[in-house]
Length: 474
Image (tube, rainbow, N blue to C red):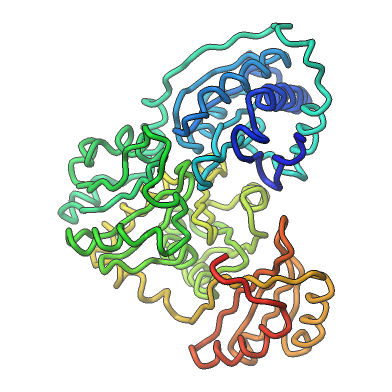
């Protein structure tokens, strides 16, 4: 039963069936066993090496799951520091700030209210995915004997770290540049999620902490456990109210966070959504001015415009597989200063190589202020090519289909297998594509980019028949 809730990058399921408090206790025990052993293997013993940080989101069942998780951790030999109701990136900060053995956030991110789950991080906030320890957590959780309950060797304490966290996030904000610009007006859609707590605590209620930023709030109430719209900013329909409000209030830009506030999407002053690869391209020059020649990591599905922007700013482009486990590893390996993913995750060297929606907002506001022009104009140079967006196809034999794609189009360009199959015919024909397998479903995911709309349409007509049955709105 417990195997049903373990996914590629985290633990997630419907509450209370199959994910309930008993399972929460098991996962707490398994997490403690794994995280304490990993920390011990580091060979760097500190007073906090038997401590784990725990936080939770605003879902109505998160407090009881948090309690069960904490008890399992204590029964597994850990002491627990409960930092309360926080956004997921707060956990990454707290693990490093306190130098703990790891931590767990109770959250189901952008899933509907009936879901919940756990995101596990090792020491230094390194992610725990299927290939980096989640399977070991599952095995320990599945085999723990209920009779060890109450075999307490640790303890639990509550700590309020908001002041330290706010100071860390705001170290990325150039408030003086915003003042020189004459201030910024922004609309923030918190999606009835954790941004409804995080934004007021860090940036102030309606921007009160930063006198040059006026914040117009949308869906900040996160007390009911319900969502006015699905807390997934990647779905364009979920941005509709934000786009309208930006235009209506003549705001400089709009931001929509997901449920646990580790991701965000941005819309310009015209209410037009900005692709996260283009947003990354816009921000790279800011980081490379401060860190000349540094590497920038990006999701391999990103526009060629991003790679070009990195080269133009004197940086080193590093393509990464899709997913936070791979992005964080690539940042560490290449000592990159910054990274961006199409999903809305933005990663920062000076944030322990971890992602943060709050820091992304601070950096964005600073860059827009320094740019001195409307956001649509600042982003215009990045809109060089035409993209298909991610298209999904249902197919039973994914491997055979990828082999057919390679045989058909591979001879026309270069091919690599970093994540799925990437065929690059950009230099010769003006287009490239990536096709990846879904981890959990019989789906292939296609992204195509071309120099112009007509060429994009032609290439899609060639590729799509090979990939199976199109899945609308997936």
